[in-house]
Length: 376
Image (cartoon, rainbow, N blue to C red):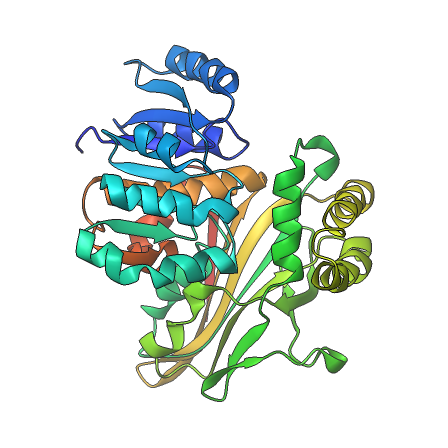
């Protein structure tokens, strides 16, 4: 594996620092930690260079909203990994990466960001760059899980992916910008399911298109709400035998699920600027006040189809007690395939649809994700 140089924008944040540590553990890559606070970057650089041999980490100041700052930082770099809550500056970062001539990856969930990058596909392809979006566990893993189970079938007929995130929010330090971005996307996501040969809007009346899924591990059986991810769009085309698929997300707690999100969705559409701070603060308070154990992050696919003319099922569950680590591990598992050149190719890709799923699962399990499978 060549000694590539990666720049992590937001490299000293909650997820960025974990990605940096795993990359130093798993690869020979050189890292640049970039962000608005050079002090925070340099503090983490000292820690990492003390823990790992080779002095492979440096820190710099860089502002995601400043194109010149980004272009200066990108010189001599192979790939920029956007690990900060800067989805609103996605265009600035992506354009700077193209102008300098480097590859790109991000870990943000943002429908606006994904649409923007998708519109740049031809430019990305012409430049010969590899752009990977929607890294992490969701988005990032649901479609990969479908690819993983699909190999066990002659005909895959059903693949439902569900998640549950139970975090001790009271013990976390989350910036207001991160909380706002998180809440805005959850309040404004598309709710689509694939049934009867097409993606269609979920029916919320009577919760007709909600599902229940038994997540186990103390979470038990609970309702999950359809949440469309761009990575799932191509799944029915890849597996034409599918009659039903989609991604579903379990709730946080009763207060946030049934009061904060519905209220925020209305207020942010009516008063996007004036409602931003109060709804974000309300969500943060609701998460910290009403979230109760057990804690952990879990992703599960329940699938069915036929093999050798017989009906079979295959269920796979991925679990990690730390949500930030569960975001970092899939990103690094994807980068392992990128760094050895096995998946690096020109174009715009989602993490879930560019990775080789078997190696992804093996590498994630080795780095600490609990992987369990059941089948009949």
